[in-house]
Length: 298
Ligand SMILES: NC(=O)c1ccc[n+]([C@@H]2O[C@H](COP(=O)([O-])OP(=O)(O)OC[C@H]3O[C@@H](n4cnc5c(N)ncnc54)[C@H](OP(=O)(O)O)[C@@H]3O)[C@@H](O)[C@H]2O)c1
View 1 (cartoon, rainbow, N blue to C red):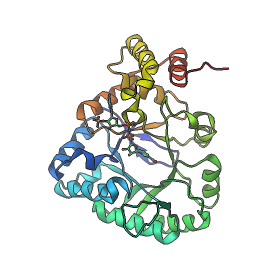
View 2: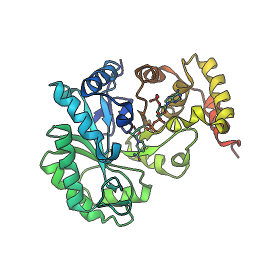
View 3: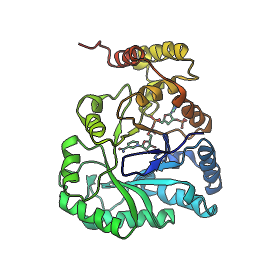
View 4: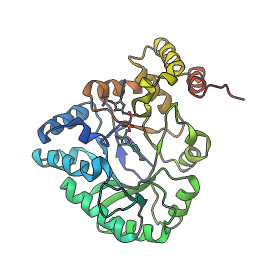
């Protein structure tokens, strides 16, 4: 059973693996089936759930909320993360996909999320993507209002560069607690561009999305050399699956990322939980790095 861990020195306490609900509408669950699915990952100790206002063309939060309404007390056993700041064309009034981080939008989006989840608080609210038109003072005003009213307990960002993070942080009286970023053997940018260095420096832990490349890592013929090396390391470490080796590779990073699981398959979720028992040595870690990138370290 996984135990909660602190995301940053200021909290919150999250499960070391997080359940991502981006693909919820693809899983075609009734609210009752969704309750059972939530209970399944809770039984593994996966208590933190990741959402966004836009997931499932703006429908995921409310679908998840229908499940929460069916099972009183369930919400209090979860930590809810959600995001705002993207406007997609799923809404007819959006003639073009864009970002929107003005104060009114952030506050309204958080309040909509509270309504969808039928809850009085969000554990963590993230700005989903860096907005070229972001006014850091306005975002800070929105965060402060949501914090003071108790509607949002913690704040963070997603897909921010270190300088975008530093800019927003400079306007806040409390610490942003995470940067949620893409990390996998096939997407290693944040490992080298300073993003994870900043997390380590500030002792806050990134949340890692698409650790399995959205499934591509297993399906794309291009990644066969990577799969071959993952299989070698799987045999050496006694891991139960290639996915466990990939999660162990992400978990080995010194910024101590919290991987977000994207699978709707309970067997794969329980398999992912086993990754915390797998330790890679340095050479195994670099062999996977090389197999994914196709070249050695300089
Ligand atoms: N902040 C951001 O910008 C951002 C962006 C993207 C995602 N996210 C968050 O991160 C979460 C995870 O992202 P993700 O869904 O892309 O994660 P992922 O784990 O990389 O991909 C999940 C997909 O891979 C498939 N899969 C898993 N194991 C597999 C295997 N062994 N063989 C073949 N296919 C396999 C799953 O299918 P099955 O369901 O059939 O297992 C699912 O379709 C999302 O739910 C969301 O919460 C955040």
